[in-house]
View 1 (cartoon, rainbow, N blue to C red):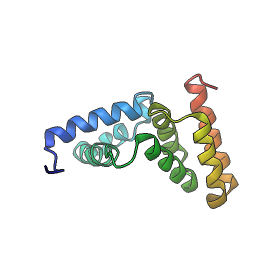
View 2: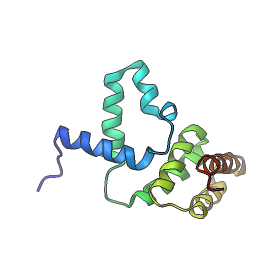
View 3: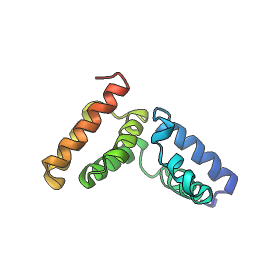
View 4: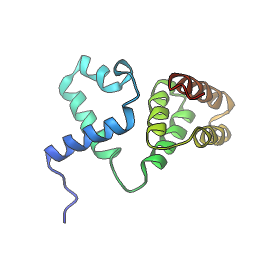
Length: 132
């Protein structure tokens, strides 16, 4: 059986994965909405690849994928994107303790200031989700 998906299957998978990851994120904070303002066709292509093909892969669990993403975004000091993926992490079952531990672990490689920025974002997401 081939791993190739039809275009319709990719669209369906994109929608399913986007809902799973980003249902708790305000529309105005979603990158897709920003991309659409400038190029609707490219926004769709980005979304189909990133969300429909990459994020939906089942090679590792969604929770592990999000912890890896959170670690990467922490070290890169990308708080806006980090916020999206902390939401996604919670939405796929990551705990506050797991996310905080990943952030603390990255302080060794990305520095304490980067970890502090990420912890502030985690605190903000917890407040938004009323889970603090």
